[in-house]
Length: 63
Image (cartoon, rainbow, N blue to C red; front, top):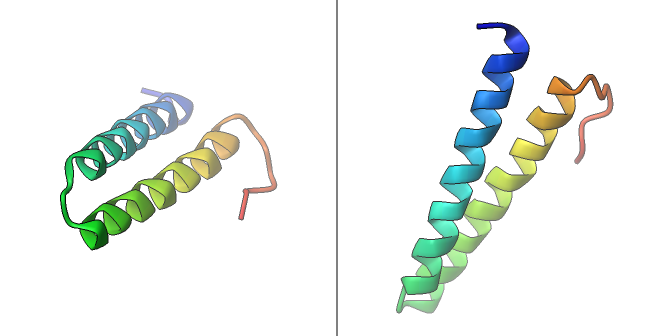
């Protein structure tokens, strides 16, 4: 597997994890838990965008 394939796989895994956290947040009854899960999903999505950018050759990662 090439480095690009590995990064693509990592991005897919991160996006799946973020989606799972969003789904879990929607089911959470505690507002603080919902907020925590939503924020964690947002951080993972942001990181996945950075990894995706690196995989595509973008030399300026998002902040």
